Each structure stands twice: as structure tokens, then as C-alpha cells.
View 1 (tube, helix red, strand yellow):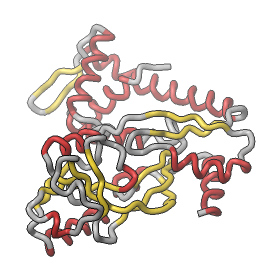
View 2 (view 1 turned 135 degrees about the horizontal axis):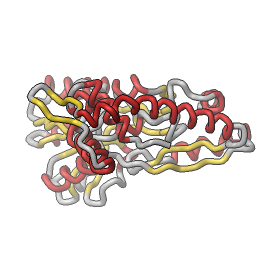
View 3 (view 1 turned 180 degrees about the horizontal axis):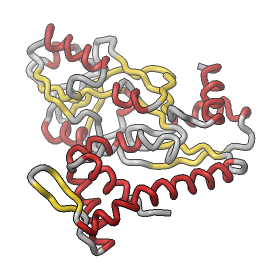
View 4 (view 1 turned 180 degrees about the vertical axis):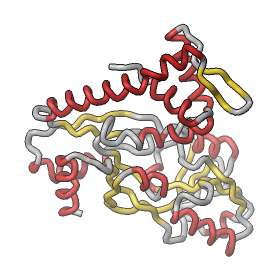
Length: 295
């Protein structure tokens, strides 16, 4: 209906810089600049001028920006009306699936409650576990997806969506198949003395922060290396390539074929469950109510 890159232009102009716009869009500044460059190339117009204080519109950019918000709002209204008309006939739940957030746990639940939704079908929607873009995917709950299912102890994620806990996964340790600990059936924290343990940086996960505090206070012999705030395959690759240990969870044992995942002599675990939009439609809310009855 409209060029989605207009959203990027509006965000940059309102924010006054690529960096501030990237924070609001949950993208990197480089990705935002690339989108603006693509829009300028498509229109064959220079829209923004870089200045020491940020960015400002060119004369051509002022004309495009003047009407961009109207076009975006009008297109969104049209799409919303079309979806409302379609919803009378569309009885499909869209479920996101990825390497780290697979749809199988959702499928296990679906076949326990699907008799309550006899006319509904499921459509799996793949997405990438890119730590730079995962928040953008979470932000599309209610649009691209009806549900995601995965591990969630992130304050950032929980601020963006509803979460229905379904259970907990044990925290475990992954190491290279050639690591000295790879053959162990279970490890103790003392086994990790002298090792570098990769885990997400402090501040977003209560469980990880509590575990980090325990390690720093009681096991200073373990060196901690911060990873990206959200895991993706690059984190598992770094574990395999450096020989470091990686804090992981039991459901990710098959993510990287070069790693082995080992239980640890501790009680740490993390919740997983259904993620859905804060303004979810009635059928999504009805589904969550049915799920609550069986968990």
C-alpha cells in the first residue's frame, strides 16, 4: 500500500538523528542509514542532509515528509479495514518459529486445545534470531504473528508484549566438543574455575542477574564475558571458536552441532511460554484462556 521506508524517514526526522531513530525502531544506526539511502535511491531524490547536530530535511525532503505521514496513516487505516473485513472469514493463527524459539512447544499445546477452535488453522512464520533485530520481531506481535513461544525473562520483552508462562527450562553450560569438560555428564561450579563463562550482560534478566551475582560473589575464579543482550547463532559460534563456556538452556542442546550441553549442579532455571500482543484480538485471548486451563 505504501513504501515502508517512509516510516524510517518519519522516525529519523522526528528524532533528529539516525542514532535516536534506531533506538526507537530497535535497529542499528547503520540499518537505519541503509534504509534512508534505499529510499533516496528509489525516489532519485536527496531527502536528508547530514549536519554536525544531526540531520535536516532538504527542500525535496520537506515535500516528501509533508505528505509521508498522511500516506502512512491512510494506508494503515485501509489495511486495518481490510483485515477487519477478512477476519470474518480468516480463522488462522500465525505462529512465529526460529532456531532458538521453535514452534514445537506451541504445537504440543495446540493439539490439546484445538477442539475448542474447530475452524482454525495454523500458519508457521519463520523469523531470524538476530540480536540486533529480535525486538523488531517482538514488536510485530499482533501483525506478523499472533503468537511466539520461547524463553522470556527479559524486562525489555515483557514491556512490549503479554507473556503466559508454560514452564521452566534448566540453565546449563555449553562447551566445544573438544573442551576438557565435554565428556562430563554433570559439572559443578568448581569445574568451571579458570574458565571464561559467556552470558548476557547485566540489567535485563532477573534470573541471569541473580546467577551472575552468585558467581561474582562466591566463585570469582570463573571469569565472566558479556555477550549480546539477546542470543543468536553468532553467540554459539563464538563459544565453539574460542573454547569458552556458554550459559545456555536445555532446549538449545541441538542449536550448534559443535557444542555439547551439560547439566550443572545448581537449581537455576528460566521461564518459557506464550508471547502475544498487548492489544490482542478476542480469539487470541480466548486461546490463552483455554491454555491456562490445562497448564
